[in-house]
Amino acid sequence: GRHHVTNILLAIAVAKYLGVTHDRIRELLKTFRPMQHTFNVLEENSITILDDTYNISPLSMKAAMDWAAERKEKPKILLTSGLLELGNEEETYLAELGQKASFFDRIIFTTDSGRASFAKAAGKEVELLGDDTKKIDQGGLLACVGRMSVHTIRRLLP
Image (cartoon, rainbow, N blue to C red; front, top):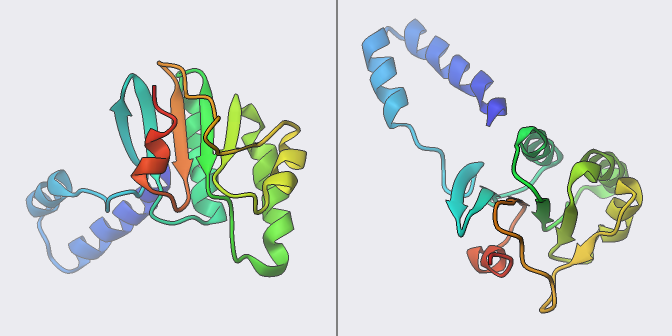
């Protein structure tokens, strides 16, 4: 994701400071692969999937939403485990992120925690993932943010 550019530039600066050549830096960058489930984009069953399920934070969720907002695929669906363990700030983050998520055609939570606050801020229904949850239409985008299994994601694929 775009938010990693700063990290890469910092790593290049440190490598240069330590005397690593430009050719070696280029070689290492070509082989770099992010950790699994950290902003990985893949395509499956004609669905573009953002797999950012390693962990979740307000910052990572914002980055996923920024990325999804710029994409052409339709419909756009957010699948999230929601934000947990944010203490006194939880409602503030849910309100901010819910407003930001209003462009999604569908928002689906894997748990009920925070769902009502997110829905109120988004100004739309937020579904709770269940056995009767409608699958995603082909050609769509599925932004998966927060802890969840691959099995959970596949439940929504056509």
